[in-house]
Image (cartoon, rainbow, N blue to C red; front, top):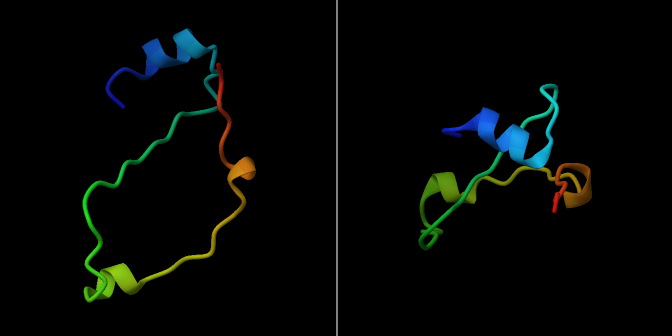
Length: 52
């Protein structure tokens, strides 16, 4: 993130928390070994908070 202090101030985020985000674009190539790797996932509500 380029401007974490500005984001923290704008959304009232304390220093002990952080904003993490990722964006995947494009099409998956299922034949590639890396795209066959799957991980366990926790429910979204355990890791995501939307502040408005």
